[in-house]
Image (cartoon, rainbow, N blue to C red; front, side, top):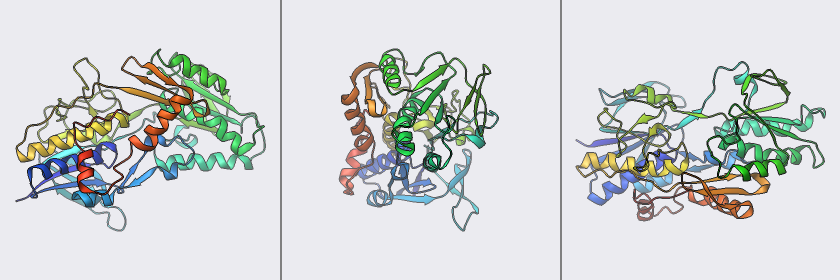
Length: 404
């Protein structure tokens, strides 16, 4: 009887998990193991680029890649995971929405993460975000519609809630984008709101001076030490009572792992990520691996853990898929290791700041940093461009560490 490796999710981790599993099965000559991947659509959504001006273009079709490597794509949404029965419940999309079950021998949970939306009054009804393609498209349509409104300070003001990585990149796009819509002479006001006491609280002191310089030169301002307490159609109120009138409020404050992690009886961190061992197997749960934003995974022996980023998701995916397949065919698992770490923060027309190491030592900035960011965003993080099976499988090697 054939066995099945089941991957949930077609993001960076899910895609590379399936391809890495196919690589190992190809190496050992096993054609009796099915690799199946479940996702709503057979596309990789290039989520790190959704702050840019054309989110509709940030998706890459995957069916041909899956066909070339023998990965079975199942269109649907996973509703339930039963680790005792080793099966998942899937709701189909389209006409057939009946719940059906699918068993597995090894499961890779790579369902990604979603923007955290705390119960702040008005947050759901009156904010925009760049978390998913449809949401970024909605923001774009709203921004274009501003030119139809009467000129006012409120119309020309954008509040970006959250001054972390995504908040900084989103805010950096706004002045030029607004002037492109409202006119080059328009007085635009982009304000970042952050509960912590620093811009880029998780980025550390290394790149912060350059980031603050860039934001200031673009005319972006910030309010620190007080988060958003309420949002309405006309703006936001901060926890300190201050009011900011704005027709556009963009929420960027953090992400949480897929809710499916709650159905796995394992330990989770504050972001909902499952604790995994060095092979990315969920601790204490047989036959289940977690990957990408669903995994709380050590990257080295120095106490560092993977971030919720495509940089780590790609290599977590390669390792988890390889190890799930290794389990099935009786091969040794390989320990996941990714000691090298970089960040590259896009700062719009000013450029970008590129750092290396967990202490984030600045290596490039301005135009040189922007050139590096462009290569990362348009090349390094994309799926294989060739449909040649051998080339795709070669890129799926877990030893191939891509630092991006």
